[in-house]
Image (cartoon, rainbow, N blue to C red; front, side, top):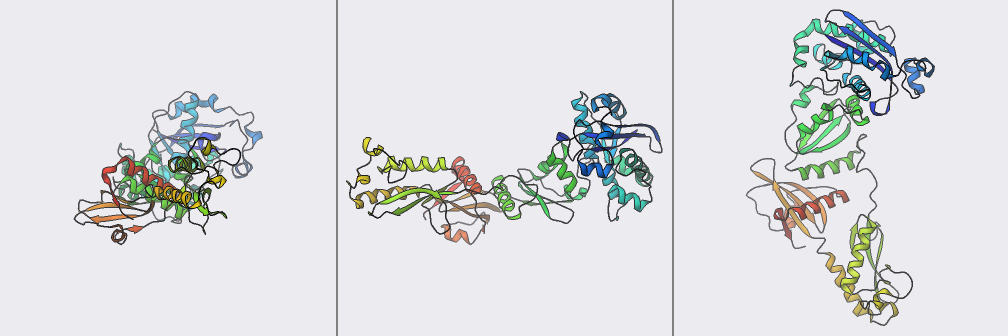
Length: 455
């Protein structure tokens, strides 16, 4: 027995929206044998644009039962039946979430009439319920109302069963992905996904990339986006807007993370929210004051000036500068760590009096140069060697003067003697702070994979 379902809601995802109307037709494969239908009080205002689309107003649902009042009957209609809907994961996510809140755990198989229609009756310009029914001459009485849309879906499902019942039964198989993939994504796109590290891309109807993700295992990660029963906005956005899936394999998970970050910065996909914020990079700058003393100061990075060291957080910069002051006996006042009062460095005997001109500028500047030179140890040049895409190659990530330069693949039998020759063998990528910190952290955790160069 099949339960053909349609609902109307206050919004696009279950975790923050309510159901305003529900209709369930019990369908035996030939005809509807029973029906449950009701308006539902969503306990929240219905947005005006949804009122205009469905015709369901706040006044209409004010006296309607709340979902928990009809939950037992809804559950009895759905239990042990195959849940069928047009874009099934949308309707199922709402009903499962609301039943769960009422104390019922819905565990049913699902069928999506969008996916079934694309497979069984291919070639239509659109597979939206309204346009598909127009093309098939299925009359919808009450479009965008649960009763009318559920009745049309039941008729459509009956037509699909007549044309190819074998595929429908196959779609209910344990290993079938037909009931979890987005309604508009061909199953072949999922079947081609590899079990390797890499980056995957979700495309919209026009082919534009709307989401970029990285994975240790591309196939498992993509599957996880759709196989869970999350009621989140992100999952519903993926289900609604994803029409194609593509990918790029990488030798390692680290390379996948790097590629994901560069792609997000380059493509700015609409459903990627992390790594889009502006990077407030800071730096330690050195300049000479009018008395000839070299001074160190923390400022925001400027295109026209070259810092001696860069960092992401001000707290990180202050910690580094304080360490330089103590290690190289610099003046906290000349480094703008202290702005007033008696010099703390003189009181603690590590400042030699440069702030009061008691120390010669040349002697003080020599220690400033030494302090700056010590930072070059932090800004090292090295490569990270790891496994490649196949046994005949190895992956390589190059960091030059503390900055991520690029990555690529090298033959296993090649010997790289210097960084300059390596630059010609790999692909340069635009660096950002996320990548720099990611690579530096990895190099610290896996020193056996790192080879240092002299800059």
